[in-house]
Image (tube, rainbow, N blue to C red):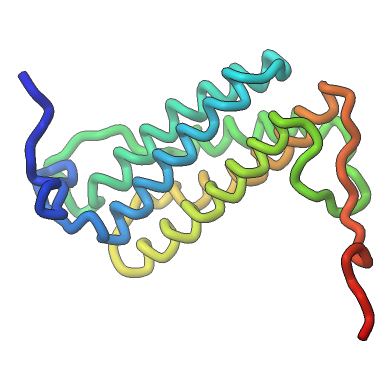
Length: 187
């Protein structure tokens, strides 16, 4: 049996529960950004030697991003659809990992994205996560969404920042300090 529905050929797609929406719908934009984030997270775990606990945590997060996508694809007013949703326990898990990563003191300065290649990808993933968060919050102002989604994405973006710092530390690469005067010329 083919999964090709051909409904997308005319710019439409379906939500769980059968409701059809345009592919440009804000809900679909947010779901697409979550898919982009999920794909991006495979790069630092597949291509670079990062700490095993980060690989395991990111793998768990990638599964949760599918849950988040299903949550977004199922409007909360659709009581007939039974899908997994992001819950408080998922946020608590992220917070536990954040606490573990915060055991190493944060730099006392702002850092630029970069250092190791793995850290660069994790910083990029953080930026994509922030976009997903903005899209989800905006959607939630117009349409009911799972109540834990915005908080989950907010915590995830902070986790990804800390994971990038950890990737640099484990590679023995110093964080890149922001220099506010670099590149500034006076007239």
